[in-house]
Length: 169
Image (cartoon, rainbow, N blue to C red; front, side, top):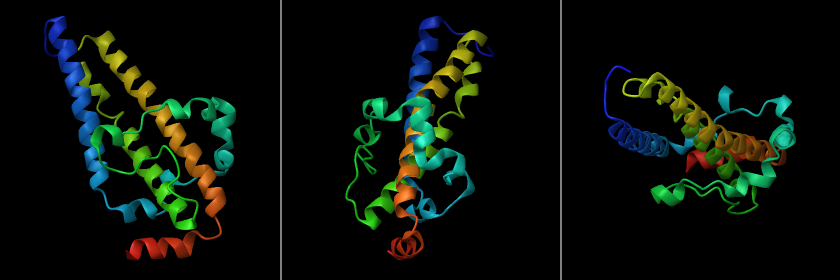
């Protein structure tokens, strides 16, 4: 701990800091251009070992608990709700897949501030903050990869033409 504070203040600062980081990172990701999420960046691609999302279902039984995760749009009153599909047309699926990329990026970035908590927390609490960041964000990342894998399998044949239409809008 670099800064020594009473426990009550540490707890208050932790709650406000996490709230700030989650909201700020979400707002930044919401401001990113939609077209950026339509691209097949390496870190967003569905890898063959994921078996179009089947790996995540087999390892974590995603279908049984993904409905329990709150959608961030209820807090920000902005964005694209991923609680369900907004349609089954190719365009709808491409938009949903792009929004899963936005959500995944948001949650990867939300893990990054965790080491800052060592500044005002005792070492053991700093590690608790890192654990919190991982436990809170990884399930959401898994759900995004699961959903995107399933959508990628469905849209594989129409992807190129649809992206051109979406980017041009």
